[in-house]
Image (cartoon, rainbow, N blue to C red; front, side, top):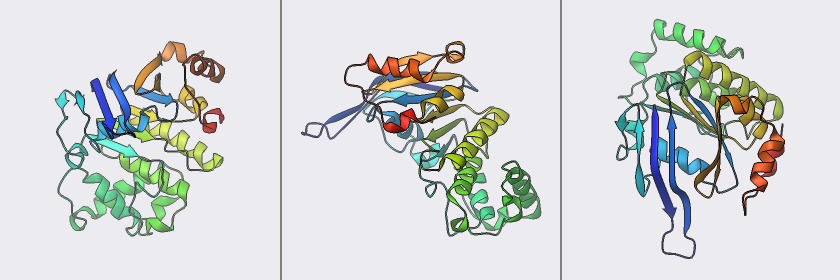
Length: 263
Protein backbone atom coordinates (compact mmCIF):
# COMPACT_ATOMS: atom_id res chain seq x y z
CA UNK A 1 0.00 0.00 0.00
CA UNK A 2 2.93 2.34 0.71
CA UNK A 3 6.41 2.00 -0.75
CA UNK A 4 9.08 4.57 0.11
CA UNK A 5 12.39 3.92 -1.64
CA UNK A 6 15.76 5.63 -0.98
CA UNK A 7 14.08 8.87 0.09
CA UNK A 8 16.40 11.80 0.81
CA UNK A 9 15.72 15.39 1.80
CA UNK A 10 18.20 18.11 2.80
CA UNK A 11 17.11 21.49 4.08
CA UNK A 12 19.21 24.62 3.43
CA UNK A 13 21.79 22.77 1.29
CA UNK A 14 25.16 24.45 0.91
CA UNK A 15 24.66 26.74 3.89
CA UNK A 16 25.82 26.68 7.51
CA UNK A 17 22.30 25.56 8.41
CA UNK A 18 22.35 22.52 6.12
CA UNK A 19 20.45 19.61 7.65
CA UNK A 20 19.80 16.20 6.14
CA UNK A 21 16.32 15.24 7.34
CA UNK A 22 15.98 12.02 5.32
CA UNK A 23 18.99 9.95 4.32
CA UNK A 24 18.13 7.22 1.80
CA UNK A 25 15.18 6.01 3.85
CA UNK A 26 13.15 3.03 2.59
CA UNK A 27 9.91 1.73 4.08
CA UNK A 28 7.29 -0.70 2.81
CA UNK A 29 3.81 -1.08 4.29
CA UNK A 30 1.27 -3.73 3.33
CA UNK A 31 -2.45 -3.00 3.29
CA UNK A 32 -3.74 -2.80 6.87
CA UNK A 33 -0.31 -2.26 8.45
CA UNK A 34 -0.28 0.11 11.42
CA UNK A 35 3.30 1.34 11.88
CA UNK A 36 4.27 3.53 14.83
CA UNK A 37 7.34 5.78 14.48
CA UNK A 38 9.56 7.03 17.30
CA UNK A 39 12.94 8.69 17.25
CA UNK A 40 15.24 11.40 18.48
CA UNK A 41 14.40 15.06 18.01
CA UNK A 42 15.11 16.06 14.41
CA UNK A 43 15.22 12.42 13.29
CA UNK A 44 13.09 13.18 10.22
CA UNK A 45 9.80 11.72 11.45
CA UNK A 46 7.56 14.62 10.44
CA UNK A 47 9.59 15.15 7.26
CA UNK A 48 8.73 11.58 6.28
CA UNK A 49 5.02 12.26 6.80
CA UNK A 50 5.27 15.55 4.90
CA UNK A 51 6.91 13.76 1.98
CA UNK A 52 4.26 11.03 1.90
CA UNK A 53 1.42 13.58 2.08
CA UNK A 54 2.97 15.75 -0.65
CA UNK A 55 3.45 18.77 1.60
CA UNK A 56 7.10 18.76 0.53
CA UNK A 57 8.99 17.14 -2.33
CA UNK A 58 11.97 14.91 -1.59
CA UNK A 59 15.31 15.60 -3.25
CA UNK A 60 15.57 12.02 -4.46
CA UNK A 61 13.92 8.64 -4.09
CA UNK A 62 10.36 7.61 -4.83
CA UNK A 63 6.98 7.16 -3.14
CA UNK A 64 4.24 4.82 -4.34
CA UNK A 65 0.77 4.69 -2.82
CA UNK A 66 -1.34 1.67 -3.75
CA UNK A 67 0.98 1.05 -6.70
CA UNK A 68 0.75 4.62 -8.00
CA UNK A 69 3.86 6.80 -8.23
CA UNK A 70 3.01 10.09 -6.50
CA UNK A 71 6.45 11.75 -6.53
CA UNK A 72 5.28 14.78 -8.51
CA UNK A 73 1.66 14.76 -7.43
CA UNK A 74 0.82 17.95 -5.44
CA UNK A 75 -0.67 17.58 -1.98
CA UNK A 76 -4.18 18.73 -3.00
CA UNK A 77 -4.38 15.87 -5.52
CA UNK A 78 -2.69 13.41 -3.20
CA UNK A 79 -5.38 14.23 -0.61
CA UNK A 80 -7.76 11.72 -2.17
CA UNK A 81 -5.32 8.96 -1.17
CA UNK A 82 -4.06 10.37 2.15
CA UNK A 83 -5.80 11.27 5.41
CA UNK A 84 -3.86 13.18 8.05
CA UNK A 85 -4.25 14.32 11.65
CA UNK A 86 -1.82 16.91 13.01
CA UNK A 87 -0.50 17.60 16.51
CA UNK A 88 -2.41 20.88 16.74
CA UNK A 89 -6.17 20.26 17.20
CA UNK A 90 -6.78 23.53 15.34
CA UNK A 91 -5.03 22.31 12.18
CA UNK A 92 -7.39 19.57 11.04
CA UNK A 93 -10.70 21.43 11.07
CA UNK A 94 -12.15 24.79 10.09
CA UNK A 95 -13.37 26.61 13.25
CA UNK A 96 -15.71 28.96 11.37
CA UNK A 97 -17.65 26.05 9.83
CA UNK A 98 -20.11 23.76 11.56
CA UNK A 99 -19.46 20.11 12.35
CA UNK A 100 -21.58 18.98 9.40
CA UNK A 101 -19.83 21.41 7.05
CA UNK A 102 -16.42 20.12 8.15
CA UNK A 103 -17.57 16.54 7.59
CA UNK A 104 -18.85 17.50 4.14
CA UNK A 105 -15.44 18.86 3.19
CA UNK A 106 -13.83 15.65 4.43
CA UNK A 107 -16.25 13.61 2.34
CA UNK A 108 -15.24 15.57 -0.77
CA UNK A 109 -11.50 15.39 -0.07
CA UNK A 110 -9.51 15.44 -3.30
CA UNK A 111 -12.56 16.32 -5.41
CA UNK A 112 -14.30 19.52 -6.49
CA UNK A 113 -15.78 20.98 -3.33
CA UNK A 114 -19.09 22.59 -2.58
CA UNK A 115 -21.07 22.51 0.63
CA UNK A 116 -24.62 22.91 -0.68
CA UNK A 117 -25.33 19.57 -2.39
CA UNK A 118 -23.59 17.56 0.31
CA UNK A 119 -25.89 18.49 3.21
CA UNK A 120 -29.01 16.48 2.38
CA UNK A 121 -30.90 14.35 4.90
CA UNK A 122 -29.11 11.19 3.79
CA UNK A 123 -25.71 12.78 4.36
CA UNK A 124 -26.76 14.15 7.74
CA UNK A 125 -27.95 10.68 8.80
CA UNK A 126 -24.56 9.29 7.81
CA UNK A 127 -22.78 12.03 9.73
CA UNK A 128 -24.83 11.30 12.87
CA UNK A 129 -24.09 7.60 12.59
CA UNK A 130 -20.34 8.24 12.30
CA UNK A 131 -20.29 10.79 15.10
CA UNK A 132 -22.09 8.40 17.45
CA UNK A 133 -19.03 6.14 17.32
CA UNK A 134 -17.02 8.88 19.08
CA UNK A 135 -19.37 8.72 22.10
CA UNK A 136 -18.98 12.47 22.66
CA UNK A 137 -22.54 13.57 21.90
CA UNK A 138 -21.43 15.40 18.76
CA UNK A 139 -24.15 13.68 16.69
CA UNK A 140 -26.63 16.09 18.33
CA UNK A 141 -24.50 19.16 17.54
CA UNK A 142 -24.21 19.03 13.74
CA UNK A 143 -24.82 22.77 13.38
CA UNK A 144 -22.38 23.78 16.12
CA UNK A 145 -19.33 25.76 14.97
CA UNK A 146 -16.23 23.63 15.41
CA UNK A 147 -14.44 26.57 17.02
CA UNK A 148 -16.67 26.07 20.07
CA UNK A 149 -15.48 22.51 20.68
CA UNK A 150 -12.75 21.51 23.14
CA UNK A 151 -9.32 20.46 21.91
CA UNK A 152 -10.08 16.80 22.56
CA UNK A 153 -13.40 17.01 20.71
CA UNK A 154 -11.75 18.73 17.74
CA UNK A 155 -9.00 16.14 17.58
CA UNK A 156 -11.54 13.31 17.74
CA UNK A 157 -13.46 14.99 14.92
CA UNK A 158 -10.22 15.43 12.92
CA UNK A 159 -9.50 11.73 13.36
CA UNK A 160 -12.98 10.80 12.17
CA UNK A 161 -12.67 13.15 9.19
CA UNK A 162 -9.26 11.79 8.20
CA UNK A 163 -10.61 8.26 8.01
CA UNK A 164 -14.04 9.20 6.67
CA UNK A 165 -13.38 8.22 3.06
CA UNK A 166 -11.13 5.23 3.88
CA UNK A 167 -7.90 6.80 2.57
CA UNK A 168 -5.19 4.54 1.20
CA UNK A 169 -2.82 5.92 3.86
CA UNK A 170 -3.64 7.48 7.25
CA UNK A 171 -0.92 9.76 8.67
CA UNK A 172 -0.99 10.64 12.38
CA UNK A 173 1.58 13.24 13.40
CA UNK A 174 1.87 13.25 17.21
CA UNK A 175 -1.90 13.76 17.23
CA UNK A 176 -2.28 13.31 21.00
CA UNK A 177 0.77 15.34 22.11
CA UNK A 178 -1.10 18.63 22.64
CA UNK A 179 -3.90 17.09 24.72
CA UNK A 180 -4.13 16.57 28.47
CA UNK A 181 -3.69 12.94 29.61
CA UNK A 182 -7.42 12.17 29.86
CA UNK A 183 -8.24 13.50 26.39
CA UNK A 184 -5.06 11.96 24.95
CA UNK A 185 -6.20 8.55 26.21
CA UNK A 186 -9.64 9.11 24.66
CA UNK A 187 -8.14 9.97 21.26
CA UNK A 188 -5.71 7.04 21.52
CA UNK A 189 -8.62 4.66 22.11
CA UNK A 190 -10.54 6.19 19.20
CA UNK A 191 -7.46 5.85 17.01
CA UNK A 192 -7.25 2.13 17.69
CA UNK A 193 -10.96 1.69 16.99
CA UNK A 194 -11.11 3.77 13.78
CA UNK A 195 -7.95 2.23 12.31
CA UNK A 196 -8.95 -1.33 13.19
CA UNK A 197 -12.61 -1.07 12.17
CA UNK A 198 -11.69 0.66 8.91
CA UNK A 199 -8.72 -1.61 8.17
CA UNK A 200 -6.73 1.58 7.50
CA UNK A 201 -3.06 1.46 6.55
CA UNK A 202 -1.60 3.87 9.10
CA UNK A 203 1.73 5.58 9.81
CA UNK A 204 1.78 7.23 13.25
CA UNK A 205 4.55 9.43 14.66
CA UNK A 206 4.65 9.67 18.45
CA UNK A 207 7.03 10.69 21.24
CA UNK A 208 5.16 8.45 23.68
CA UNK A 209 6.94 5.11 23.63
CA UNK A 210 4.25 3.32 25.64
CA UNK A 211 1.74 4.42 23.00
CA UNK A 212 4.08 3.31 20.20
CA UNK A 213 4.32 -0.16 21.74
CA UNK A 214 0.60 -0.47 22.50
CA UNK A 215 -0.71 0.58 19.09
CA UNK A 216 -0.08 -0.98 15.72
CA UNK A 217 1.51 -4.17 14.42
CA UNK A 218 4.96 -2.70 13.64
CA UNK A 219 7.30 -0.16 15.26
CA UNK A 220 10.23 1.67 13.72
CA UNK A 221 12.81 3.95 15.29
CA UNK A 222 14.37 6.77 13.29
CA UNK A 223 17.60 8.69 13.84
CA UNK A 224 19.29 11.22 11.56
CA UNK A 225 16.94 10.50 8.69
CA UNK A 226 17.31 6.71 8.75
CA UNK A 227 15.47 3.75 10.22
CA UNK A 228 17.79 2.30 12.86
CA UNK A 229 15.48 -0.23 14.56
CA UNK A 230 12.36 -2.21 13.65
CA UNK A 231 10.02 -4.45 15.64
CA UNK A 232 7.33 -6.62 14.09
CA UNK A 233 4.11 -7.72 15.79
CA UNK A 234 5.76 -10.66 17.54
CA UNK A 235 8.65 -8.59 18.90
CA UNK A 236 6.31 -5.78 19.97
CA UNK A 237 4.32 -8.22 22.10
CA UNK A 238 7.20 -8.47 24.59
CA UNK A 239 8.76 -5.05 24.01
CA UNK A 240 9.04 -2.61 26.93
CA UNK A 241 9.81 1.09 27.20
CA UNK A 242 13.10 0.17 28.85
CA UNK A 243 13.99 -1.95 25.80
CA UNK A 244 13.48 1.08 23.57
CA UNK A 245 15.49 3.30 25.91
CA UNK A 246 18.32 0.79 25.70
CA UNK A 247 18.16 0.86 21.91
CA UNK A 248 18.36 4.66 21.97
CA UNK A 249 21.30 4.52 24.36
CA UNK A 250 23.19 2.43 21.84
CA UNK A 251 22.87 5.07 19.11
CA UNK A 252 25.65 7.64 19.26
CA UNK A 253 24.32 11.17 19.62
CA UNK A 254 20.67 10.18 20.06
CA UNK A 255 18.64 12.10 22.61
CA UNK A 256 15.04 11.71 23.70
CA UNK A 257 12.40 14.30 24.41
CA UNK A 258 10.95 14.20 27.92
CA UNK A 259 7.66 13.29 26.26
CA UNK A 260 9.14 9.93 25.37
CA UNK A 261 9.06 8.93 29.04
CA UNK A 262 5.33 9.55 29.41
CA UNK A 263 3.14 6.50 29.89
